[in-house]
Length: 333
Length: 82
Image (cartoon, rainbow over all chains, first blue to last red; front, side, top):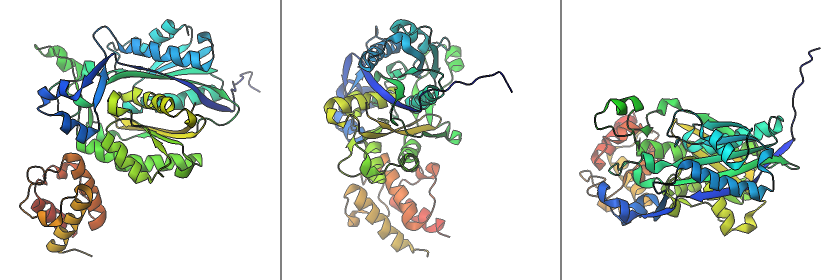
C-alpha cells in the first residue's frame, strides 16, 4: 500500500463575504462621446450605461484589489494569514510576470499563501470561484481569496467605437471557505476557441513594440458576434447550470450576469424566463463593464441595496474573450 | 415548408415590429436597416436570431454584415430555405 496520503477538506463551501472597490473617477457619457462621434443618448440606449467609474493615473489595478480584498477579509471574520490561496482574475497586469496575486497576498498580509492570476477575461471570477471551491473541498486551502481586478481604461482607445465606451475600472473580492451547508453549486464552464478573434486586443504586444508610434495595444470586439453568443449560447449555459445545481428559476433570489451591456442582460433574462421576483444585477449602469471584476461588484451592490437577499440563491455567469464562460449557483453571503 | 418572398417579407416585418415597434407597412424591400429604419446592430442581431427560428434557416454572423437592406435579408432567407 502506498505511503502517500491525500488531503481532504470541508464537504461544503460558500462565499463568506464580498468586498468592492470602484475607480475614483466618475466618467459620464458626455466625457467620452466626442472621440467616438456619439452622444449620451446613444450610449444609454445602446448599452444602458449612464456613467462609468475609472481610475486616475495614481490608482492601479493592484490598489483596487487591495481595497476590495481588505473589505472581504474583514467581513469574513478571518485573519489574513488564514488565507491559503490568493487568485486574481485579471487582464490588467501590466507585466507578463510576476502575477498580481503575489503582490496582493503580500499587501493584505496573506503571505505565504499560494498566489496566481487567472487570464479568463470576463469569465475569470467564475473560474476563480470554481477553483476556490475545489481547493477548499480538497483540503488544499482552508480559505481562498478570489479577486476580479481590472484597470481597463489602460487598454481603452478613446476613438474605438466597438467597446471602449463600455469599459470601467474596479475590483471585486470574495472569501471562499468551509461551510456546514452547500453554498457553491456545480460549475458549468467551457470555451469556444473558434471565436478567438471575436474580442481581444487590436494587435499583439510585439507589433506595438515594433511600431514607431509606440502605442499600447487596446481592446476591441466584434460586437454582433459577441452579442449573439452572449445571449443565446450563454442562455443555454445558464439553464444547464441551474439544472445541474437542482435549482429552478423560481427558486432564485438573484441573477448576477457579467455586466457586459444592459441590452445583453435584458435579453438574457428574457431568454431565461426569470420570474419578476428575481433580482437582476444592473451595476453596469453606473460602473461600466469591468470584465473580471463585474460579477463580484454587481453582487456586492445588489446586497447593499437588498440586504434581505443574503442567504438566498444567485445564478452568476461570466462570459468573454476566448471565448470562455463559467457559471455557478451560489448562496449569497 | 418553404415560404415565398412575400411571406418572408411579411414574417420579417412582424419580427421587426416585435423588436422595435416599427410598423409593418414601414418595412419595404429597399429600406436600409440602419439608415432608413434606424435599427441598431444589437436589435438587428435579435431580429436575425428570431428569423432563423421562424424560417428554419441559418444566418451566420459574417453574413449578417452583408444584409444592409430589407430586400437583401428577404433574398438571403428565401434562398437559404432551399
